[in-house]
Image 1 (tube, helix red, strand yellow):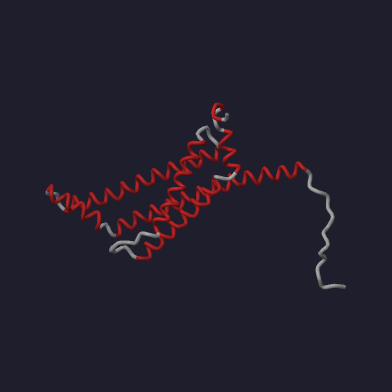
Image 2 (spheres, one colour):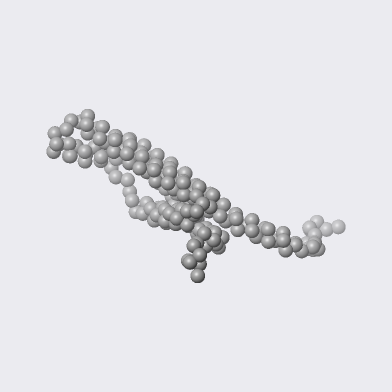
Length: 194
C-alpha cells in the first residue's frame, strides 16, 4: 500500500467531434461576451470618474471662478452672476459627459444585440477604448494643481481612471481576437467581402 496517488492515466473514450465543436463554439462566443462585459465595465467606471470630476469641480471651483471674474469685470457683472455661471458651467460639462457615456452605453447594447449598425458601434467603442488607454498614460504625467480638493479624492479618481484604462486595454485586446473580427466580417456588405 502506497501513500502516493495513482498517476496512471485513466483510459476513456475520446470526446465526440460534435461535443468538441460545441465547446469550441461556446469558447468563441465567450470571447464576444467578455468583450461586451469589458466595455460595460469601462463605461461604468467612466461614469464614476465623471461623477467624481463634477464633485471635485464643486469642491474647489476657484479656477473657473477666476476666469469668470475676469470676464465679468470687463462687463460689470455681479458676483452672484459669476457664481451662477460657474455652477452652470460645471453642470453643463457634466451633462455633456453623461451624453457621451449614454451614447457609449447604447453602442454596447447595439453590439450585444448585433444590430445592423454593429460595425459602427464596434468602431466607436474601439476608438474610445484606445482613447482611455492614452488617457491613462497621460495620467502618470499629470499632477494636481494647488487646489482645496482633498488629495484622497484625487487618489480615488486616479485609481478609477487607471481601472478604466485597464478595462479599455483588455477590451481593445479582445476586440482584435478571431471571433469579434469574424462577427464583423459577417456584417460587411457583399462588395466589401471581395
